[in-house]
Image (tube, rainbow, N blue to C red):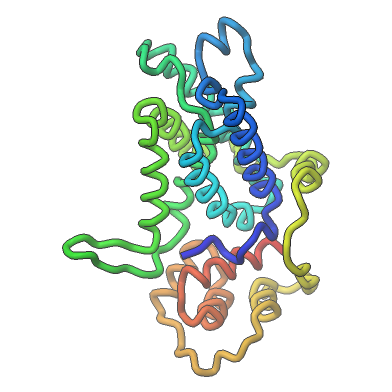
Length: 289
């Protein structure tokens, strides 16, 4: 299972976020300060150390957390490709702001000495992303290990569980706050899913991050006509597929239930050799152009 084509193509915000997390974590780790940058109700509200809100968002407290966190951020770039960088910037901002506020309110309400300083890192964004991952990414393969049943999504859940429990309660609270923020976004609270930033702000991450590796994407065909997505799929995937059997009806229905055009869903399944997860990625890519 993967998050679509390799690299950060069509995902400049994810690219900038991953680079920033790596740089911040390495720099503060060398200085030996990474364990002191977590959110603290006392520091933010009473000492007004507002700079910690930004630094704690981009800095993981340890190298293992950086590895798992960067992997999950990289995988979840599929959502930026799905909704576009502008709306994804709204999702990122909403997830971080709401989850940070929930963490601070939680500290004040619980009044637990062990939670006086929460672990740092973009837990809000990562665990907000698990909400659309659960609802919108289908399972393409299932397998069993002894008496246990797994799917190709299990590895993402296991990586998330490792990150969620990395510092026990200090990481559990930020993770749960992130899931709650993602749920509020999905419920379209205050119609947040309709909000878009001015293009100047949305393109800031593109200018900030490094250029994508790989060849440029071909120019998309005109958008007039009802079958733009189908033509986009055909234009980007021209390999012969005559040996591929007709896609199963249940696979087509699964993609249609996700909001894709039936003809586009069938063609994507054909080009993906009936791999429903790969077909989903093809369709998501076609929506970006």
